[in-house]
Image 1 (cartoon, rainbow, N blue to C red):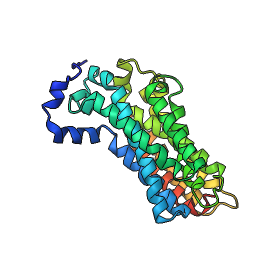
Image 2: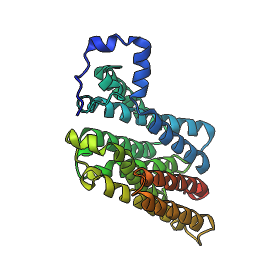
Image 3: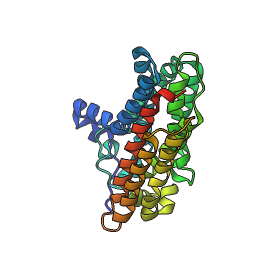
Image 4: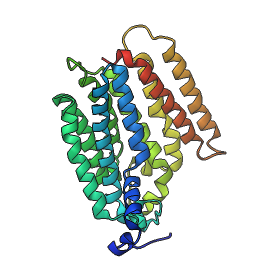
Length: 290
C-alpha cells in the first residue's frame, strides 16, 4: 500500500494562499454540502416558507454541512495520509490541518445562531442533527453504529423545515421516517467506494463489516423503504405518484442487483436512481409536509 508522510507547515505554505483557499473549500466536501443544502432549501420552499425564511434555513444547513465536512477531513488527516489519499486536501498538503479545524469550528459557531433564528425548537432539532454528524466523524464512524448519525441527521432536516413554518406544526411521522431511511442509504453509498482503504486504516463501521458485495446489495433496501413510506405514509388514499415512484425505484434496484456481477458499480448507480426518485417524491409531497 502506498504511504505518504503527513505534510508539514512548510509544504502547505509552498502551495500559496490562493491554492490554500481553494483547497480549504475542497475540504468541506462541497458536493454533498451543496446537495443537502439544496434539498433543505427546496423543502422549505415547497412547505410554504417565504423567500427570506428559505434563505435563512438554507444558510443554517450550509453552515452545519461545511462544519461537518471540514471536521471529517481534519480528523481523518493522518488516516488519509497513511492511505495515500492524494485527493484529500489536508493529506496532500494543500491546506493545513489546523486551518481546517479552525474553519470547522467557525462554521459550527455560525450554525448555532442561524439555526435558532429559524425558531428555538426547529433550531434545536437541526443542531441535534449536526451534533450527530460530528459524533460520526469523531467516534461512531468506526463502530457498528456508523449508520445512526446519518439516520438522525437526515431525519432532522425535514423536521427542521416543518418546525420553522408559522405556527410551528409538528412534522409528519412519515416525513421523518423517510428522511432517516434516506440517511442510512446515503451512509452505505458514501462508504461503499472507500471500504477497502478504510479497512486498511482500521475503520470498522457497519458497511466495512458487511463487506463490499453485501453493502452493495443492501444499499437499495433503505432507499426502497423510504420510497414506500413516501408513497403510502401520507394520510388518505395513495395517489398515482406513489405507486408509480415505487415501481420505478424497485425496477432500478432490481436492475442494479442483476447487473452487479458484471459491473461492480451497478448497485451504486441503481441506488442513485432510487434516491433521485425519493427526492422527487418528497418534493411532490410538499403540500402535505405538515
